[in-house]
Length: 70
Image (tube, rainbow, N blue to C red; front, side, top):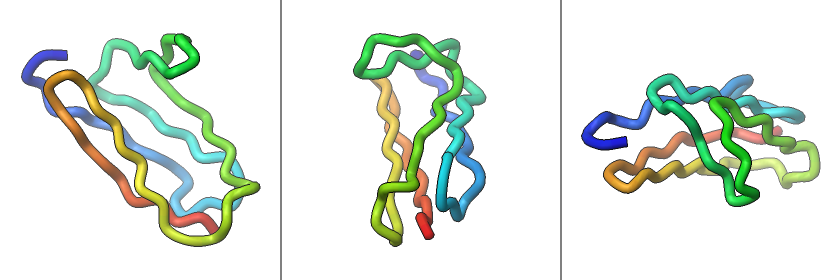
């Protein structure tokens, strides 16, 4: 991605189970496992309650979103 701002949303927030992350501006997302996706499904059920920060970076941009796990 060149000069485009990173655009994504996460829901439900707060969560106590699955957290879905949808990328609005990316053509694809490559995870550390090598899978190309436009959306992520994260499972927060084992996480301790509290605030977490999701950070997404591209070569040109960095954005973050605060998530509440109950």
